[in-house]
Amino acid sequence: MTSDNKDSKLDYKKAGVDVDAGYDLVKRIKPFVKSTKRPEILSGLGSFSAISRIPSHIKNPLLVTCTDGVGTKIEIAKAENKFENIGIDLVAMCVNDLIVCGAEPLLFLDYYVTDKLKVEIASKVIEGIAKGCTIANCSLVGGETAEHPGSFLDNSFDLAGFCLGVVDEEQMIGMDGPKIDDVLIGVASSGFHSNGFSLIRKVLKDHNVSLANNIDGKNLGEVLLTPTSIYVQEVLNLSKLLNISSIAHITGGGFFENIPRMIKKNQKATIAFNFSDWPSHKYFKWIQDVAKISEKNMLKTFNCGIGLVVAVAPEDEEIALGTLNQSVFAKSIGSIDENQGHEASINFI
Image (cartoon, rainbow, N blue to C red; front, top):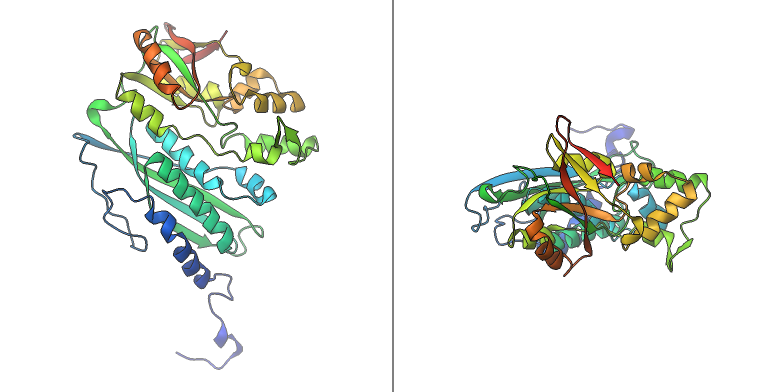
């Protein structure tokens, strides 16, 4: 069908969607994606869907899924014009949820949506996603890049990730929950991870704090963009040596929301917590001092230096600490106690 009117030259690009930029992006990211390919993956980038075998070492496989984003940490990346690590954050937020039940990450997909696709920025973000997948031994098998002209502010984008994992039914973590007197071990975070950034950004604005400010020899922007720790290998290695009773990923909602998720009714987690024990404590102390945030609100919002909490039997405490400390700082922080007639709760002493 043809038309001689002035709209006859209208095309998708003039409507705000540049498909050629999309093709360019796919060409750029192919090497990153290929580097993450596990042997189970049968399909390649560009297929309409991803095809994978179940890993042969898992005898009674259960599929485990999760999805997440990185929140307004993206705004810090934009302000600093540094996009290399935000993709690692995206993977970390998903696989850290997955590993809580002992699932091995298998496939990862991303969703990148923007007002107008800027290939340089998008390729840096996706390269970071590939790095995160490499750390987690997870295949980046595809995703979706979308332009939504008129729906986003100029130069804005958002991210979401989806991860599929697999776990042997007989080796799942946390199904029976922890036992009374189990020891709680904290595993260090790299910093703020990808939570609490709406509060962080409000503190920066309200107190006129520059991202160029120096904190312990680093500029604040660099501190805030430190990528989220990925705990997959630590948990998988530990699970080969002993029985892990349960795990909590300290993500949105901090300790008060996430610790009760790892324990049962009639139990409470008793925790002796000190900010100064943890390698990244100086960053949490900084925001607490600047904004005069109470310790309770800190613990309700941030990981405060601990990204993962692992429950093990008292007789396994020494080997658990020895194993974890080979790759990341870990320390006993409390125990599981009886809390008869009450819902799962947490108590700081």
